[in-house]
Length: 406
Ligand SMILES: *Cc1c(COP(=O)(O)O)cnc(C)c1O
Image (tube, rainbow, N blue to C red; front, top):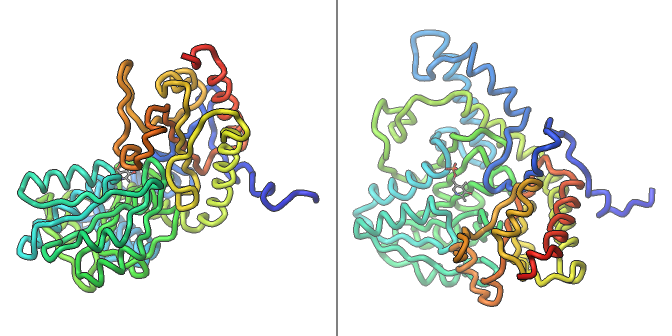
């Protein structure tokens, strides 16, 4: 047919969402994603007909709810190579990270008071760590290299006799960089410290297996991969057993580790989103990566003539992530020009006067590109080739406009 293999990968999604033509193109998939219609469909009955409390043991409403929760738990566990008893449902990754860090710290006070994490973690890991510092714990924030990767040798050097926990994310939410989980897990296993990973951006998108990667605790959330907002989970290893002090006390749900009535429709949606994500993973990543590479092709200096840098490792990253720094315009100005057509975000929070660089970009170093406008693109399941071409055209137009030349 005369179509090269790489060309044939650049396709529109097999399933399109009904979208208002006036709505901006959505390229902010690291912030959140729409619920996939297939996920919504399995959730709906649990809001209405099957509304029971999964803790009610005296009637069929409760039994149906409990059955659905246990099936979802099994599905989710299977997706990450775990068993059902190792899953605790939470309200999302923020809660799962808090439970992992504070829960482990409280349960292992006897062993020591030291945590190792990384400078580029999400605030939902960094702030629980800072909180532990306020309780006299010691926290080591490891640096990353200019590509955003942690150095496993350096990690080995940071683990001390009183280290209880290492917390390192699977995939970064700004620059998409994938950390070497397997190597980190092996090291933590050898040194007998617990390994927690925040996999909020990785679940459903990259293969995760708690045994192969030697993970003791893993945080996930549904809304970053086409599931509903307000639901997530913490995986907690049983063999060898990881202990945890509950952070929410109440009716003793989730084996006492996380009290509160379970939200059955959201739990069912989480499991369906994971299962669907894993089943689509290979083909979807190829398609999304082809769109991402096409966007970069439009923008890269050789083709656009712009002074523009790619932030983060060029290969060790999520398929849908592109993070760039552009010279010659302020991020706020560029986003202002684009916002009615394209929804995306800047890795840096900017005010009118001062530009504040994100802690992730700061950690990469690269001082030459730090003053530049930073854009984070999150390409997802429902983006089309036209979304990419239109976005690139609008950026190139904005860069040529007179206000860009200040
Ligand atoms: C989104 C995100 C979180 C927070 O997840 P919520 O479910 O919204 O609480 C934590 N860590 C990372 C890496 C994220 O991308």
